[in-house]
Length: 116
Image 1 (spheres, rainbow, N blue to C red):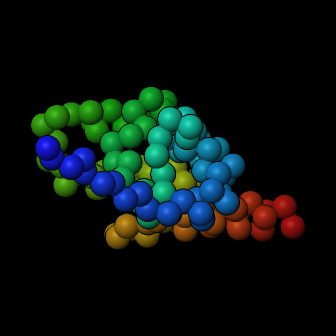
Image 2: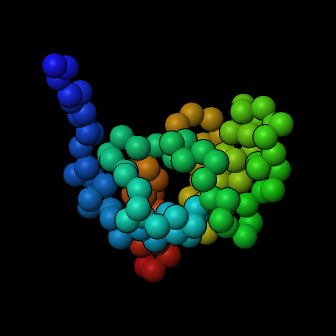
C-alpha cells in the first residue's frame, strides 16, 4: 500500500497578522473573497495571475486565449500595478515577484501615513 503524500504548508504567522488588510485588499484589487483562498507567508502576487476577471476594470484582452502567456502575464501585471498604485498609493516593482506579506505591510504603512 502506498503511503499518502505529505504536504508541508508554508507558515502563516505573518499573513495572519495582516488578515484584515488582506481581506480588504483581495476584494478591492481582485474582487476575491479572502476566506475562499489559501494564502501563506510565501504567497506571491504572481500566484494570482489572471485573477480579477470579475472586476469592472479587468482588461478584456486578458481573456483572449490567443494571447501568449508571457504577454498575458505582462499585461495583467501592468493592470495590477496601476490598480494598487491608484487604490493604495503603493508602487509595485515592474519586474520580479512581490510577496503578499510585503505588499500588505506597505498598504498598512501607506494607510497610516495618510491618517497622520
